[in-house]
Length: 234
Image 1 (tube, one colour):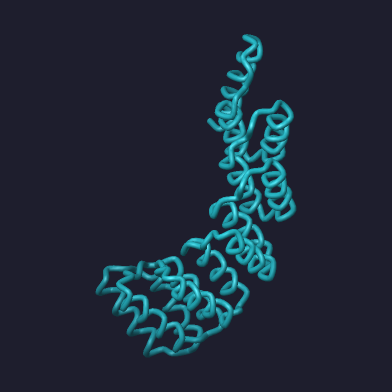
Image 2 (cartoon, rainbow, N blue to C red; image 1 turned 45 degrees about the horizontal axis):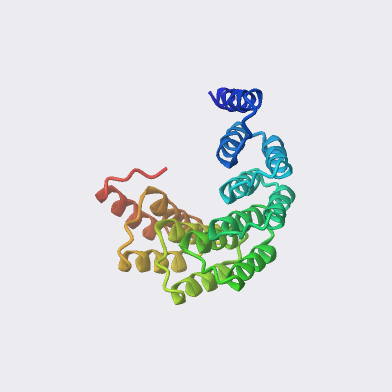
C-alpha cells in the first residue's frame, strides 16, 4: 500500500510534467509524504532539494516530518541536516520542528544537545509544551539522570504546563530502574492529586519499582489496587 502511495504520487507528477504543468508545493508535499511513509528518507530529502531547485517552496510541514522521521530512525546526522536545510530555505522552525530535533538528540542519548535545542527554541520565543518537556524528561529518566528529570518536571510546572500521564509514567520508569520505590510512590500519588488517572503501564512501572526495591508488602498492595481497578499486571 505504501509503495502504491509513492507510485501514485510519482505518476501524478509525471502527468503534470507531460502536460507542462509545473509541480507546486502541494503536489511535492504529497510525494515527500509518500516517501517518508515508505521509509525512503533519502528519496524524500532529494525531493525537497529538487523542489527548491525548481523554485517550488517546500512546506515547513515536510521538513518537520522528515526531521521527525530521521529521529525515529535515531539518525541524528540526517535530522540535523534537514533542520539546517529548513533554515536555509528561510522557513522559520515551529515548536513541532524543534520538538522533532530535540527528539532526535534524546534518541541519540545526547542530553546536552537536547537541552541546547530547548534553549534555542525558547530563544526564538517558542515556549515548549508538555510534549516537548516530556520528551526531554523521558530521555533523562532513561539515562538514569533522575535529578535532571525532576528538575525538568518542576520547570514545566513553573511554565504552567500540566504533566500528562505519559510524563508521570516516564519518570516512574526511571525510578523503577534505580529501585527507588519511595520516590515512585510519591510521584504516583502526586499524579492522582493532579487528577491524572493511572493506566496499566503506569501501575506496572510503580509495581516494578517496588519489586526491584524488594518491598514485597508494598508490591502486594499495588497488586490489590490493580485488581480493584480491573487491571492485570504484565
